[in-house]
Image 1 (cartoon, one colour):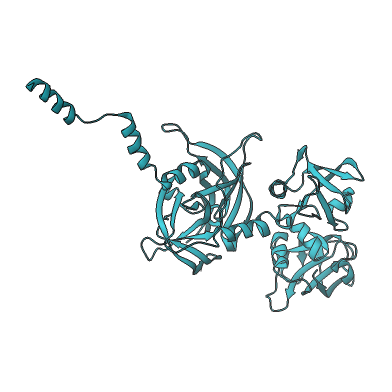
Image 2 (tube, one colour; image 1 turned 60 degrees about the vertical axis):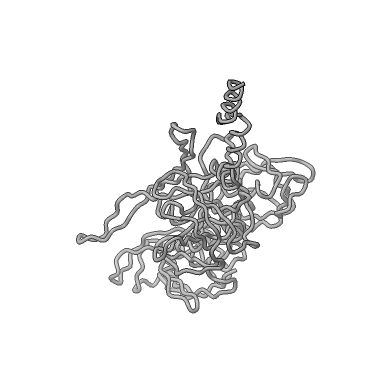
Length: 449
């Protein structure tokens, strides 16, 4: 009897090791934050950009190589990454790293900057990977219904510590902070989730694992305050700038209706004299794809279009009057296309000699005119040398590159009058000489389209 009672007490006092109870304990530890981190981390990258750093020394300005680091998030399975512009500013090369299994080296890919909007501190990168590679992505949410005190999760690489997760709440909305180095920080999300150097460009997620912002800056004057660009603004910049054909690196001079028709995109405009016009593309043609690829959605078309580079022959597959045919087009640089479209000419930067004592200088030479465009209406001719540009209420521009001139023109509204100093060197000797009777300084006003 006594032995039986002791045995019963022993059974009651032994700790339980049942597998169901262990499983229940683990399940209680798997919070929504854990699930979000598990889902999102494969789509977060560590970015290392080799950059050129300019320093002023007693011997004058000097350049040296440095390393800029930050984070990014994959938003499209083909390897498109959104990050902050300041992470890749002045880069010479870019590489991105993905977290691998514990104890193994990170998976590293080269990447290239496809487009950027400096004033919004946003950049779009393309990972250089085999065509069959499919990357994990983070779903885009909305920032239109965010709530104060709503829980959020930030993932990034602070201080080089790979893929660190921090949790907090939204502590403020619609925050503006002073601009830094040409960057505009307005209408930001404020959070107390830890955002430190290296988090820049990483995702800010809601408790459902949706992207609601891109981490961008921290407040060095206060603790536990970080900021993120709202995802609705990121989406708008993607649509209007980073993925817009007019902002793509390669310019073809045609536009399509963004709504697909029978898994194709109808050409709605072709600019006279542009590469598409010269190749024979027509309004009404249905673009099926190019280089053997087909695009059935607007997103797929825009991402693929943004990837095309200037100077490369692209075989566009089009359907015209129920027949499929190929049209080969060589794209121009965006700066060339913008000047051709807005000002009506293509140009190149040349060196000329000014005998007034100013030595040799860089000028913009007209190479080609668009039929019926502003430059032709003004009377410019191929070979004319443009010395300076001046728009109303703007400073005089003496450009040293076509990219700078294109940027100047792009910031002017249609109808703006652009006054130019133009040299016409009729004997073609490249000398700007006031005493030459066959050299003429023209004053003309070009009206931008």
